[in-house]
Image (cartoon, rainbow, N blue to C red; front, side, top):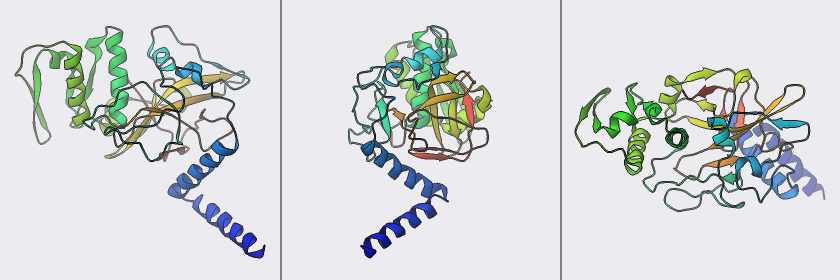
Length: 292
């Protein structure tokens, strides 16, 4: 018995020590999340729901923030999901090693070329929304070099000539406005744009002003980025949010659990300048950007 008590004490001490570092906290949160997933059954998941809005239940006292029909916010909130229990699959059809991080898998195909990683998946979601809304002239992103590459120019036959940090565009192929060519354009974007270019290009948003479609970001090479896909509010104005992410290696886009606050998981709360711990990543502060 003494050995058992001593062993438990050592585990508790290690747990507390780990919690004092960012990486250690990620580990302990992961363990906590696994245990919580086994011991308790969340009240906020409807396993028969086939979209974000029908899969995740709103906690008592909250309601979903209203957005206009046809808006990017509504598009994300009603995004289709794979059946409950679907796994995170890598671009090469292998299973990702961590299958307890998510509550849902979004219906976004993962190309076998391995290019569609964290930032790329979000640029695809935004681009497909603009395509669907017949706002194709708004599709475009900066390369990491800072040069803007639009779908319109690509469809007209212009291709980049890249030499170091210098980029020029030349009309080298026949015009092609097809959906198949659109995805070739996105592959080009995935190659030359990413988390850092998005951070440098896009508008920064204070936590008090964030909304669905805004992205939690840590810029860098590599960095990481996640997107808000739902938003709720209570009578006192407190808000909570859902987060989804693509990842590296390129893999299924998933709706994330909240290992920091298992009571409300998968809902998240954010505070200005505070760090954010999600199952796969540590953000040293709640820093957000917004698509144009």
